[in-house]
Length: 181
Image (cartoon, rainbow, N blue to C red; front, side, top):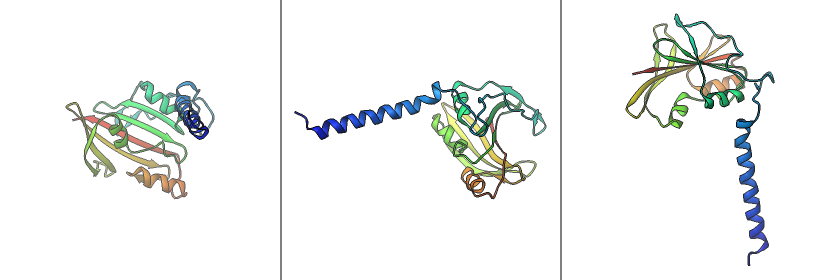
């Protein structure tokens, strides 16, 4: 015969697990809104630049996972073909932990990350870059965050704290460039 505390503990554990499951499923069934406007989130609700670094941008469809993430993101997300690379642009309207390093995303997708370093491009802009490898495929990924005031960040944590403490004002444009190696 089980004691009353054992039954109560098991009931509490079940209730807690069901609550966690329900919270995890909300984004799948709820109607997403932009946190800053209350408007429905869509990948096309934002006017994106026609070019990036003198290359035309051609919009690409977002995956179901990307659409679910975008529905909760405080801003807009767009994915584009730039000819030699895929460019992901995120227009960020407020400090958020939902803007995280690309290396975290690639690790979550099963990629190994190597050769992480800071690099300057032909225009002398600083980028955080790394190589992502999985199943014999290698990608070169570079990212940076540009603030409305002109400052730039290669570290999302540094950006988050600068934005949170009012040392950087938005909107911010987070750029991730992914190219095949």
